[in-house]
Image (cartoon, rainbow, N blue to C red; front, side, top):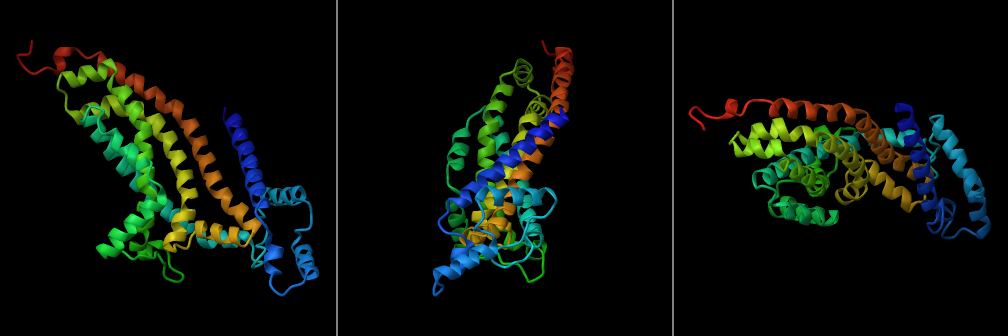
Length: 324
C-alpha cells in the first residue's frame, strides 16, 4: 500500500509540474524578451534568448528541468543568475512560519465552530458557509482596515527586520496569518459539519445525550473518534492550500516569503523559480495526503472500539441514584 500511494504521489507531482510549465509557456513573452526590451534590437533579443536557453523546444527545457530536479538541482534564476535552491532557502523559513501560525489558528477556529454547531444541535452552519464564500482579498482588506487602520494595533505592512526571522517580529505575522486562517477555518467547518451531524444522529450518541451526559464527555468519547479521519485528511488538504494561498497574502502585506517570490518571478517570466516555488504546495499537499492515507486506517479502528465499550455499559451505570 505504501508503494502504491508513493507511486501515485510521484506521478501526481510530475503531472502538476507539467501543468505549471505549460501555464508559464502560455504567458506572453519570456525572460529573454523582457530583458531585451526597450532599446534592444531584434538581434539582441535573439542572442539573449539563446544565452538563456529559451530558443530550445519547450519539451526539451521541461525534461532538462525535471531531470535536474530529480538530482536536486533546481537550476538558476533567469533574471539574477543565482541558484534557485538558494533563493528558496532564504524565503522558505518565513513562509513555513506563516503557514504554521495560520494552521494553528485554523485548527482553533474550526474546533470552536464545531463546538458551536454541536451545542446548537447542528444549527449555525449557515454562518460558516457564508464566511467560506468570502474571497481572500476581502478578508485582507477588512482586517487591514480594522486592525491596522482603525484600531492601530498592527502594522499595515508585514516587513521583517534584515536578517531576522518572523519570530523577531510577531506582530507582522498576525494580519497575514488571520487572512489565511479565517476562510480556511470556515471552509473546514463547512466540510466537517456534515460528518458531525451524521455522528450526532448515531444511536449511541443520541442515547448518551438523551440520558444527560455532560456535553464535553459525549463530544470527546463518542463524537471525536468519528471526526479524526476526515479531520486528518482535511488538515493535509488545508496545509497545501495555505502554502498556495501565501502568494496573494505575502504580496498584499509585503511579507518576504516564497509567495511574494512566486508573484515577482511570474512577472519576470523566471520559469525555473516559478516551477520550484510551485512545487512547494504540491509537495506539501501530496506528502500530507500520503501520511493521512497511512494513518487513517489506524484512526478508523479506534472509533468502533470506543463506541462498543460505551454502548455495552449498563444503562443504570450512567443514571442518577433513584432513576427509573
